[in-house]
Length: 68
Ligand code: 9UX
Image 1 (cartoon, helix red, strand yellow):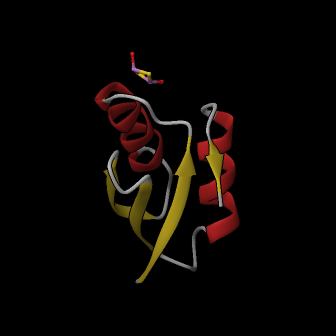
Image 2 (cartoon, helix red, strand yellow; image 1 turned 180 degrees about the horizontal axis):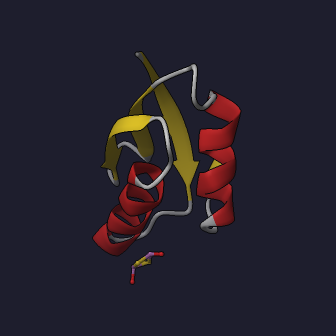
């Protein structure tokens, strides 16, 4: 298992946090995701055999946010 911090721009309320949390949790290979509005970031624990960091960022971008 691997953990990464992803910078997220564009979150303005806890609804965004919930939405991104759901998006990440639904991805195969993601075991935990902690999204923070005040830190503007997400700590994601994932299985590198199933998904990579770029795919995590892409999923967040698809939800309408900037991820890096
Ligand atoms: Mo809050 Mo975010 O009204 O996508 S849910 S701004």
